[in-house]
Length: 237
Image 1 (cartoon, rainbow, N blue to C red):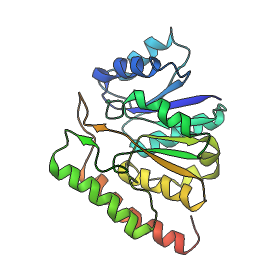
Image 2 (cartoon, one colour; image 1 turned 135 degrees about the horizontal axis):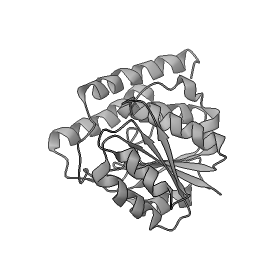
Image 3 (cartoon, rainbow, N blue to C red; image 1 turned 180 degrees about the horizontal axis):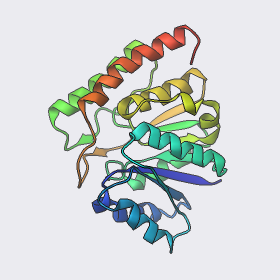
């Protein structure tokens, strides 16, 4: 079984060496794919230098800042083309603890996709301001109500996918980013009756660098749930 960890980056030079080390230290035999959006800080240059001594490190360079969702789609297509069996989504900033990779990996044989959930066992978020925490928690509730999807943390970005799920979803039709990308992927997989589970994680606000959150990402998510519900009614998922 071959696994790939996809880590999108934009200006993550302060985190990239540390996150690579931390993933490799888990000794899970995973390859890592960095999808970099032409970071001005030299993130991709660092990765290319490190590739010379690490065959498990892969890199996709994109011409500019194109968004989280399209970065993951590029990574998913790479994983399918290269014959991987399962794929992780993971942030570069240590919001997702690399030590949890093994916990998600153990479940992927039993389930088709596994979600590292901030809300399956109460609220497990550290160092977020109350306003952002309430926004995220409300977004999860709002998504469940509008779409009918029972996932507790539909906007969470720490996940493991069986390659069969990614092959079954038309990735060319996945255009959203940020929160809405996570919602869209979960919804499409759920509607196709793939088996999923959520396991509790502790989400920690990034150690270094700048958050990519914006108002546009929030607005996109608000409208995406209605689009998904309508497409589902019309049988277009």
